[in-house]
Amino acid sequence: MEFLLANDFLADLSRGRGSTRHLYQRLREAILDGRLAAGERLPSTRQFAASLSLSRTTVTEVYERLAREGYLEGRHGSGTYVAMHATTPARATTYAPLEATRISEWAKRLPRSRSIVPTRELVHDFRPGLPDLANFPIDTWRRLAAYNLRVMSNDVGRYGEAAGLPRLRAAIARYLAHSRAVSCEADDVLICNGSQQALDLLGRILVDRGACVAIENPGYTPAAAIFEAMGATIAPIPVDADGIVVDRLPRDARVVYVTPSHQFPLGITLSLARRKSLLAFARQTGAVIVEDDYDSEFRFGGRPMESLQGLDRDASVVYLGTFSKVLFPGLRLGYIVAPRALQAPLTAAKWITDRHASALEQLVMADFIAGGHFRRHVSRMERVYRERRQVLVASLDRFASAWLSLLPSHAGLHVTAELPEAFDVDELVRRASEAGVGLYSIKPFYRRDARPGLIFGYGACGVADIVEGARRVGGILRSMMPAVGFEPTTNGLQNRCSTN
Image 1 (tube, helix red, strand yellow):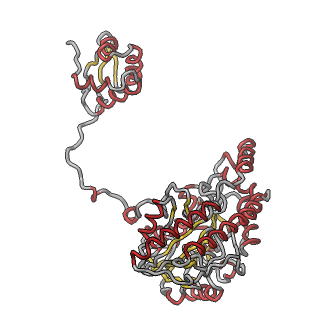
Image 2 (tube, rainbow, N blue to C red):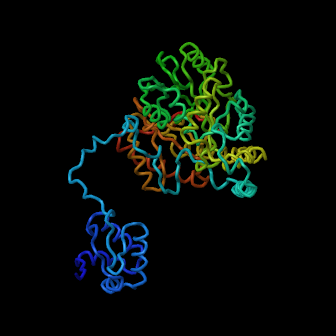
Image 3 (cartoon, rainbow, N blue to C red):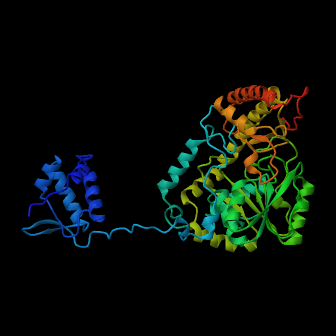
């Protein structure tokens, strides 16, 4: 019998004609969904090529590939046929409702994946959490990476230790002891893929369903999301001028997550009295304190405050750090300094999660620290960020002090400013974006009792852009105030952010 293909099927095959890949995909789909039935005979390569205005070579290549993969079979003296086992039974026309999909309770608790602050392509962008990438010594990093690839040691080419490479762990321990007064040895350090994975690992070993986890309010939203996904009950604890209000901590808190050196997002430093109270709370209740020291390498004034972990005498504090804020966000390397009792379960959790962090990145980072490049980079960037911070504070004071009140802050890569009560921050952010300025509200970081305010990141914003951005913000504030019934004060709101 002469083989004929339907006109609509020929038209579908003809789209993208000349493409071997296109013809292969269309024929394969037709076999799988049953349009070409098992045992059905295909036209000869000459006939098929002529009907599609293709070269015979193209059709022959497709036939041969489909035959190799088991979709077609040749019968001597008879032609080419669809293999008897190649087609897939027709799909059911009814489907179970989406709610019936068998995903875990953990998966159902996951928040929608999104950035902590929106990404915008704006000239004068005060986006927090970004370091200056232009000043990173990329040539040095590239040279160290090339060297480690060239020698291709066992550390690079084989599976490594779940806790991390000993060289890097030792380098981090020495650095933390000198710069942050962290009490640790190399064996106390576990390398992970950034602070986000550190929190995930801690949640896995510390948090059972229904456990109480206390966090700062406002605070670092992704931390709360991780613990909630583990089934924890979140207790938001207010923050005042001295940091987290320890007296408000629930006695059944299993974990207390804090950012004591540079509170996120307000920028406040946890006072010594509050640090002692927090450690006493952990000693009395058995709670674990998670100290996230996310960007305290850069300090611009005030008395240097040692880490909370350095004050701990009861093995209550887990210390977290990351290289993302100091070097570049794409470097997914962080570390955990944990009490001895938590090290074995943390290492086991790391191993079962992803075995170990990238060996190459660990080696390059170890060489970067050992060669003095890390310390020099931090020292250089501290001068750069100090200037930007001073310019930002001075510019906001000049152009917007009648409406903005800067909160005290002596470290990190951002400052925070409060606005008058009931001020429409979303409208300010929208107008600023239209004017080419990236502003970011602190409202998303509150779980309750949110106050109007802005977080100004200056890590990735040059001096000229800071000045012009502040000038535009001042103009927008001036235009908004009469409309919402606010009057600027004669002397401006008190600026409590030191310019040292």
